[in-house]
Amino acid sequence: MQKAPWDITSSQRAIFSIIVMTGAFMAILDTTVVDVIVPKLTGPLATDMYGVQWIITSYMVSAAIALLATENLIKRFGDKSIFIFGITLFTIASLMCGLSNSLEEIIIFRVIQGSGEALIMVTSHIMIFSYFPPSKQGLAMGIYGLGVSFAPALGPTIGGYLTEYYNWRMVFFINVPVGILLTIAGIMYLPRSSKIEKLPFNIISFFLLATATVSLLIMLSKGQEFGWFHSITIGVLLLISIVSFLLYIISEMYSTNRLIDFDLFKNSSFSNGMMIYFFVLGFSMYQYFYLLPVYYEHIKMLPTLDAGIAVFAFAVFIGLFSPIAGILSDKIGAKETVALAAFVYVFASLLFLPQLEYYTPLHQAMLLTIPFGIGMGLFFAPVTVLVLQSAPSHKSELAIVLMDYFRFVGGSFGTALATNNMEYFKNMHFLRMEELQNIEYIQHFLDKLTLLSGANSDTIKVVFGNYETFMAYNYGFYNTFLHAGLWGLFGSIFVILLFVPMKKLSKRRG
Image 1: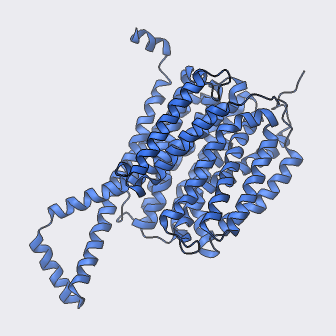
Image 2 (image 1 turned 60 degrees about the horizontal axis):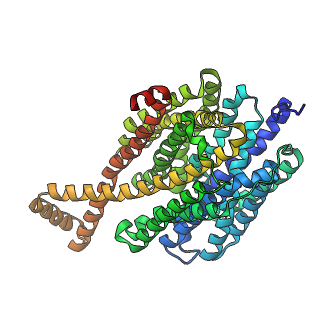
Image 3 (image 1 turned 180 degrees about the vertical axis):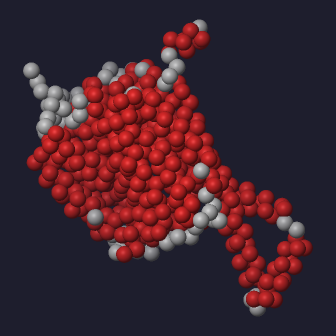
């Protein structure tokens, strides 16, 4: 009789979990740690802000494409081999990114790095889940959640420290020794994959879905720069994405070897779990990942390192509550824990985070983000357990691929929404301030400032205009934070649907 993958000693389970979790932590940390250094690369790479944004976009796009092929690679070569290959790829690419002296060079290596991240995330997810018996799989995902949900929040702190005390290249170089140690440890200690089978790969569906994904992600990441639908480029990208998705669906309908088995979505727990993951994590949480460092740096005007430390206040609670959420999933059930996480998260994001503004004392701002961190910490483990327990065991790789794919696409939507909302609400508040102003009084006030300061009247007008813009930006954050929370509230609809029996729904439809 073949031994179950979780039939191992406690020490083996601990060693395997540490190796796998460290790999996941390193990979996902890179998604936010690089965000901090991007504005500082315009000089060294001789480009502008629009140019360096491709450092993020190229990584995101390549990771999304690599995800689509990961299930087939794992089936063919085994999760251990693909995990080690992903770590090696990521480590070499990190070294080359740190050595890059031009924008073109760093973009090429970021593409390779993103592919490595996709391989690491899917395999580590599968492996750590397999090391724990079914009765403790919630705990497994709670431990794994330390990497997946804690790392993105910790990224700005680490990025800020390395940039301030060393230089931007250290953000990439720090991955190299960790990657080398992980590769050696993985080869020496991780168990071999027992199930290896050569499955046919639907190259046509892969190409169509990859094209659709690339077009969509570039459109979302560059929309603000190009002016959204005022731009022909954005319109063309949207058209390519829609047509490619439709052709992909047709290809899957008439294919004997589907790229994705959509029968998984017939299970209501699986489909609702994926929608919760897509909207709560992608559309809502990813907005806060992006917005909170911006708030601390541009509204509270903190140095990069101090902003990172402020973000760390809620990141600690993500790390503390991830294992707790895993234990709760095993004790009271994944659905119930998801409901608790959604309640805490939505409550914090709608009631506490919109209070953050320029006049909020820093210690108060940090305290207001703690319930948000608790909600995030409670979220990841039960949703993952719910999705994986709702999928057949032989489809666990595909379930995890879909989760990570939804994370990338949902996160791209979330980041685009945050960027667009910041600009929109800033302009809205600026116009409202001008509408309410008494022109004669303002002119009198500016004349008095000119007289008292001894500065040129044009200079005073520019300073006052900058102050108006800053305050419009400040007031706009209330609406932007609130809208991010509303997406979390929308995602909670699918949490409620978890507790609605499908038979009742079908009877009502009939």
